[in-house]
Each structure stands twice: as structure tokens, then as C-alpha cells.
Amino acid sequence: MTMLSSKQALSLKQSGVRWLWLAALVFILDIGSKLLVMSTMEYGWPNRIELLPFFNLLYVHNYGAAFSFLSDAGGWQRWLFTAIALAVCSLLVFWMRRSPVSNRLANSAYALIIGGALGNLFDRLYHGFVVDFLDFYVGTHHWPAFNIADVAICTGAGLIILEGFLADKKKQPVNR
Image 1: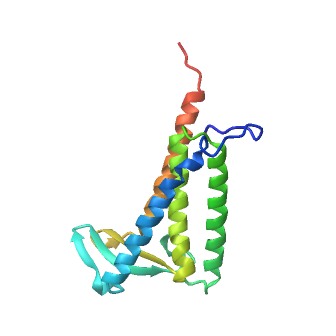
Image 2: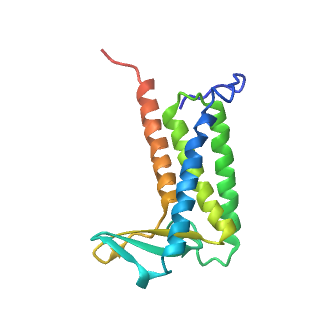
Image 3: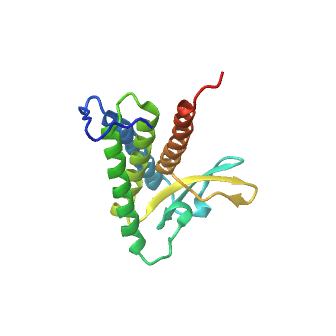
């Protein structure tokens, strides 16, 4: 990861915050898809739309986090996940501010995570739950339903891991 020291200041035009357009795009796509699902589908399993032998559209509510973690915790988890989302987004914007705009991989990863986190945060604050609707399965074994925000967050996390491997490779001396 290419980061500048705290003594080196980047203008906003030179910093990774220029990649926040990607976060806005993810947010819009996520909220738009959720509004479409909520306005056109009925809630729950019997109302699923079978599209492929391994994929359904299924409108469900998630009161927890990934894989419905803490979904039955009584409500306090909503505020915990809100605080975590705000903290993570703040940290990622801080890192983007210190990263040059040319650091495409890291900045796009951060933006994907920010856009996804804000999409799910909006749901939590507005609805009290996150809208999920993508249902992949094999036979009778279903992956927990998820949404566009979750895809963006996982993709961003994967890009951060990839960027870490690529950065380590650049640091290794070439033996000849």
C-alpha cells in the first residue's frame, strides 16, 4: 500500500478521495436495487423468484450482520453495527485522503467498502434491518441471502488482500 507520511500533504485532487464517486455509485445501485425489490416483491420464502437452477431472488430482512450474525440479539446490535460502519468508513476516507489518486487498487477497494457499508447503514437506520434478496444455492443448501452492498464490501476486502500480496511482491528483491 502506498501511503504518504503525515508530513506530506496531498491536495484533494491528488488524493484517493477522488475515488469516492465509486462509493456513491455503489450506494445508488444498492439502494435502488433494494427499493425495487421492496416495491415489486412480496416478503419471504414462498414468494421467491426462481431465475436459475442455483439462484433465486428472495426478499428477506436481516436484523444482524453478515450471515445474520446477532440477528436475534434484541435490537442493540443495530447501533453496534452502525458505529462499526461509521468508524470503518471514516478510517477508509482518512486512508484515501493520504493515498495518491494513482493508487487505483487500494482506492477502489476502499470506495467499494465505503459504498457498501453506507448502503447497509442506510437500511439499518431507515428500516431497522438490511434488505437482502440474492439467494444462491446448491441442491437444498442455501447460502445466506445478501445484497449489492455485501458484494461490494466483499469485493473491496478481496482487492485489499490482493493489493497486499502485490505490494509484498514489489518489495521482494530480485535474485539473479
